[in-house]
Every structure is written in C-alpha cells, then in structure tokens.
Length: 229
Image 1 (cartoon, rainbow, N blue to C red):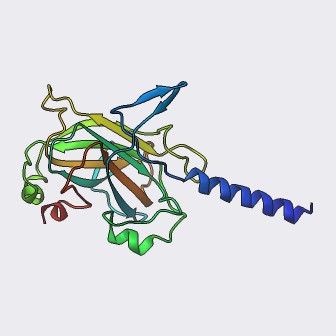
Image 2 (image 1 turned 135 degrees about the vertical axis):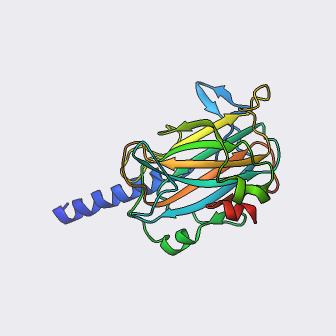
Image 3 (image 1 turned 90 degrees about the horizontal axis):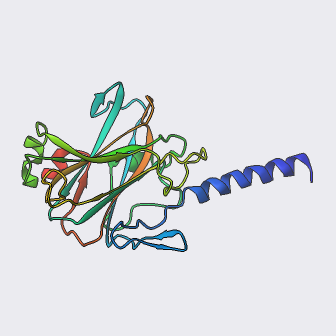
C-alpha cells in the first residue's frame, strides 16, 4: 500500500471513529434499573425533550463565578416528577437534528454547520424557590434563590467528543418527597453549564431532559422571558 493510501485509510478511520463516538444512545432512567450479567439495564425515559443550542466564541456568560463563565437553559416543569434526567453533549452529533417537539435556539440554526467548536461540558440542575407560576419567570426568576439538585462533569455513559475524550455530562435526580429542597415539584428549573477547567464555552451543544412519566407542558428556553410567554 502506498504512503498516500495509508494516510487516507488512517484519516478515514479517525473520521469514522469520531462519528461513531458521537452517536447518542437512548436516555435510560434510574427507576427500574436492573443488573444483568454485571451490566446495568435501564428502561428509556418515557418523556424526552431536546434543546439544540450554540454559544458563539466570546459570547458573554449569563453569570461568572470563580473565574468561570456560566450559561443557563431554563426549564419549566408543570407537574411533580419522580425522576428527572439531564444530559449534555458538545458538539451536536453529526446525524442528529431537531425533530418535532424539540427546541432549537436561533444561534444554533445559524451556526449548525460549525463542527469545529465544542467544549468540555459541566452541568448542574437547580430550582428557583420563589417561582410557582410560569408567567412569573421573567420577573421573579431574576431575583429568585436557586437550590441545587446536583452536578456532573464527565460521564462514562456518554459518548466521547471528537478529541476522543469522554468530556460529556449526564445527571439523574430522584425526587425526595421527604425533603422540600430535594423534591421535584412543579416549578422553574435551570440547567447550568460551563467547562470543568477555566476556558471558553463555545460551539454547538445538545441538552436533553428526560422523565419516566409523561409531563405535558414542559418548556425549555434560553431566557426567562421565553418561559414566561
């Protein structure tokens, strides 16, 4: 085999590996999880909503803490949920695109051809304590106290990024009805995301919210004003 053919074969293998690495499997729940032959088996979430977003290089953050730039995706959950799953992947996998019922930010639609920029995802999930009506999100949401349900950096369940590193994130929260601050009640939530290390958050991302029961009326948006509409 000539040197050119060898290099072409290597290039094809790398591209194929990256494409396969970015394949996103079904989102499974903690509820009903079983262990079979040492392998965890999860039933896929009944309700899934996808949000396709894009952060322009150098875009100002929604908040800056400890020298890191934080961005938010807001979620309105209209009913009590026994469990919520959140996962994020960057960049958006090649063969994935918004389907009926999914949401896509205008910046994503304008830059969906950008496959170069992506970031090491770090996610958190929080609830606004004072917001009990979606119409109040634009006003009360800006001054509300937010309580954290947890965070995740690198999940072994998530596919690798084009670099080959498993830097995508996944978080599952089980409602604790005995604790008002850990119960998944109806209300305003947000997915916070940044990078694990200090650096730029840029490029496309796909955030998914899953639940083991149907939750009609869930809203996902980049701003509180969109939630309030």
